[in-house]
Image 1 (cartoon, rainbow, N blue to C red):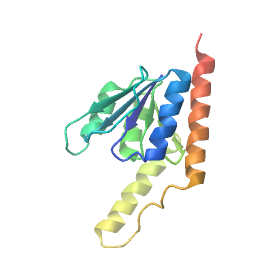
Image 2: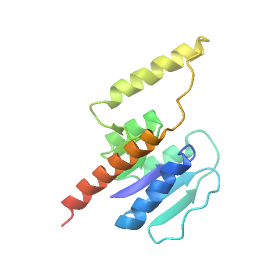
Image 3: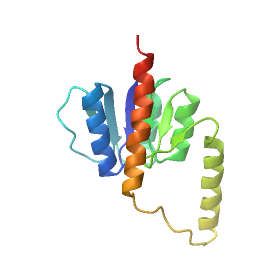
Image 4: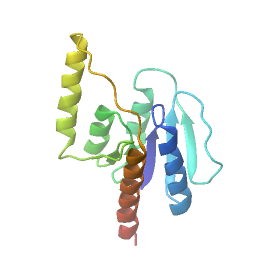
Length: 152
């Protein structure tokens, strides 16, 4: 398993949780973003700087991801793509996207986009709460534990 992070919009506390998990488990973690960022010096953690542009980081993740990998993203279309490739997708609030729920998430995203395009004010996502951070950490631990249990 390799963990890929769509790091442009990933909240700082979530990155910190991921850094600790990579250090603790030895699972490789790669953050991709179109702006520079500091990552801990570690053989398990790496940063890839991609060019600026629409979906450049997303496309770089799709090109690199393999079946069984984990992608951290709040981008629902990216999550759908990596799920089709056999990877897992987890959003920064701790929701695991699956083949069973991704279509509904895409439909809701498209519906909300249509509303905004017609001028309806839909508001944004609520700020990341402590409960969200804990839910993310719990789900990440669960996914990693399942992966480690399958290793020979």
